[in-house]
Length: 409
Image (cartoon, rainbow, N blue to C red; front, side, top):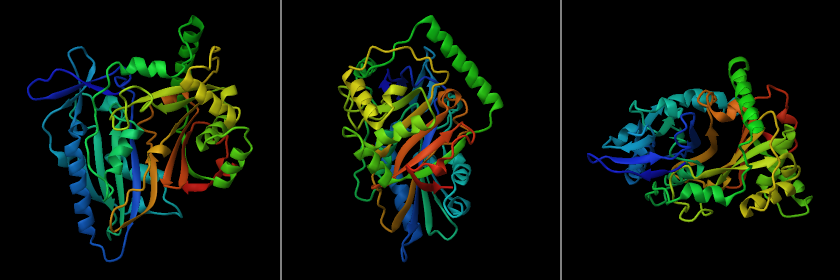
């Protein structure tokens, strides 16, 4: 899920996407940061500084201006030609996105920023659309600002988008991320963690059943709930102290989430940077792999920690076949990528992901999974959970002790 250079022609830089990036069901994803302006600061100067910094970042990472095309072998390629950097940057006025009732509203943020976000890969192939967009939205009085970064999963992951976002800090250095995939990356990544073996006729039948179930859900089920919560730090620490080994906050959250839904199986996105030779933190692309968990693996935070260590040391097997009738839960964590981005004259008061369920409607996650969890930071010391839930009200998250109340309405 990263990009490699291919032969150049007519001064055009081409990057061939790998097998996973060729999935046309991959969606875009977006992060949003809200700021209040300090008194006495010139709003126009803030906007000018933002657009100048955005141009510098894109100029240093010109692959962001590439577009998707099918190559001679019908495989997708990211094609970088001469482009106008300003087409990737937007400045607009919108009061509605800042409305608080009493908190910022998820549905309103999604609706009001939809035209600033990147959609499914299938919508981007061969039609001249960009795969990256950065925007600043202000209210009519220009004392509140929303900065959004949106990018396609075909060329990026959480690490990539946060590396780009962190360059907007006044004290940060603008630099070039490396979009060139290390040689033999896929083979090395697959050898890095334990994976559940597939291939039996029974498992293939089960996979067909999951697809049929997913299509049924797509046609007949209502849209999922989208919720955003703070975590209850005191409860997290209490659970940690009750374990017989050292565990992380992510161990506690994943164990709670998968058990809350009574899943028999779950999947966790794992960042492969620094775990695969030649793949460092400055690599741009989708350098992720999937950690697979059974019920016994997430029974407690301690067993979740043990399973994760077993995956990375390849000492977890032998595996039993996965006979779950759904793919269960799916989790990812962006907490390790986050830094407060400080911009002179502005004070941050919210940071969150934006997942538009519309662009997810054809993706593998909502079609097969029952619930999706993104763990993120909205401050350097504060953690939030962004939940997409297809259980249609069966779970009352407001009553969960591990949660510290709604972060967004």
